[in-house]
Length: 506
Image (cartoon, rainbow, N blue to C red; front, side, top):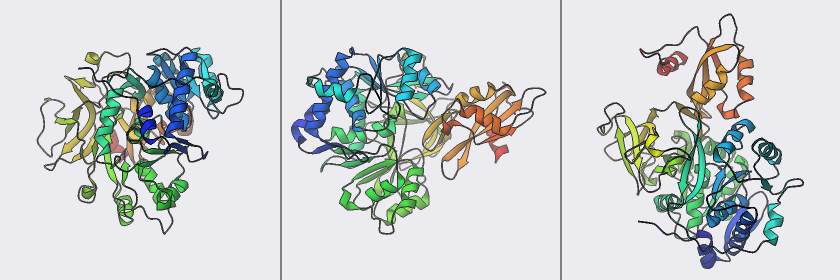
């Protein structure tokens, strides 16, 4: 059955016209729902005038701003596909993604104008932007002169709204397809548990909007419900602590990685009170005991969650009342999702409390990857998405993360796929072979250690190798330590035994 959806922005402009929809913490710019509808309508016309057709991919590299959200909805209105890029990546890394997405247009802001210009030259993609120097196709100017395009549809549930890139275990980029129906179902999954509906929510957006966690976890559900998004251009822990710790600012929701909550805690004043905040989501790891206790003492029970880009992203959430008793878990599955815990060898469900791979399915989950056949993708099996995460579910239904079957780790909430880093390391002339593993870190959750075997007759210089990787990969992917070994421990098939390396590294 085909699902027909309405235009969120037009709908909320009619119902909440004079109320604030989006504002910029740094710029002070505020747009009511009526004004936001006008900007989205005009930007939609601009995209069409620039040659964008239904199904075309429109890329973006920019700091967070109200225009980022307007572009997302303008793409939906015109039938284009929104493709935001992670500005933490190097130019070469983003160029690979631009080529894979086969962009029809790349937008940028002033901060990333030079990067976009380089990307445009590499890929030949046309550019447009805002707040830069001598911007070609200045979006602000073009919007002011454009005729508004009404949000009349058609809006079908299976229409691809976003391509969000997330690396696979091979290190090759994979563009997760996010549909309009998936966005709507995910909003339903989190709106109740996070108390987003009812009185208008006001969300402080501090996670980057190129991430599913930043864009889809709470931002889009809040906009769907007619709430207000206050955008920080970049996360500022002192400013966030000030805004969240004083009820006069009116914030009701926040979402961040554990390390960000710790930074807010460390920057908060002695008088900080968070009891007015309805929900604080924690993604990218479990809630540290001292952080959970700090916010609890000041009126806010943090809610851990688990998921991934392909999963909506939210698959579990912690009920507020269970935070202390179930702090070792990431909560319970959200409403419209089914979860199995599967033995990766027998493919049978394991008993409660036993460890297996989390398989999930539901209407919020991505239907697949850009330019990849679903039936040939190792991440899917008979309608189930195989997460690669090792979990257990207790008798009460709470999910505990136990590790990862996929070869990756999280650093500061960012996925780091070891194969991608390893390929860069072995490109160094002094390295014969390499293995990267994630090790625990107090601040970032995990960081990478590189274990390398030198080429015969050569010596590996740790600082030189780290510098080599840093010129080719984003900072959070760069190993913090290099360990030189004569050979790797391997199993009978010749595969490196990373569990043995982790034990060796302590």
